[in-house]
Length: 254
Image (cartoon, rainbow, N blue to C red; front, side):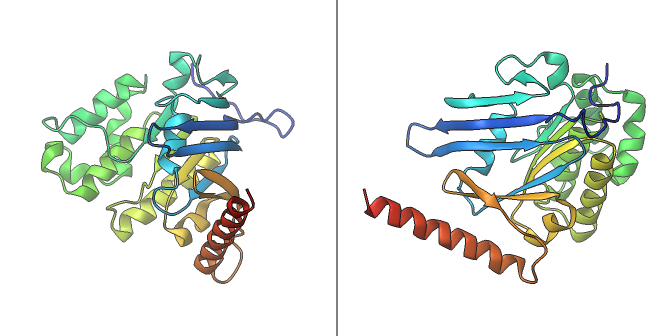
């Protein structure tokens, strides 16, 4: 059964992904704290921040790869600790690097990913056409360029029409034409009702497709970035600088 397939009226909408005061710390002290946000059906939420601020950790928590030490998270109304397998099957993700079998071809890898998510394997040709992968369809994954590997990972993450798409720096290694293709794919899937959470350091690019842009700094969400201003990059760095100064002042008063 496909989840989130039926269009929702404005009074029926519930968050697909929801965090409430979520926190997680690694042994070395790094981690995230007080994460509270939602991603609604049909919404593209972008997560931006400097390297090392916790974006990937947040996404790993959203996908059940890490378990919150504080707070709670929900996926389609289920606690992240108890999400049924059929709900996870309707999630598509690409975190850091594409997961693929290096000795198998592009077509074979997409077929396996489709089976794992309960998708329609008859649509693999359609997927390869959509992501412009036909020229490398029968090439082994290990022989691909970094850009083609990334497109295979994105195709595998989206080919089963997931209700939630979670992508960590999806434009890494993509050429300009592939970035436009990614933009078109995400916009189309959001229009079809998918909830999308994407991290990126390309501010201008996420501003084109995101309904909301969440700012992250030092392991915490510090608000939303207004993408309507004339100098988005300047606004971003100004918000980060102000947050750093606030933290330093707060620490000095302890």
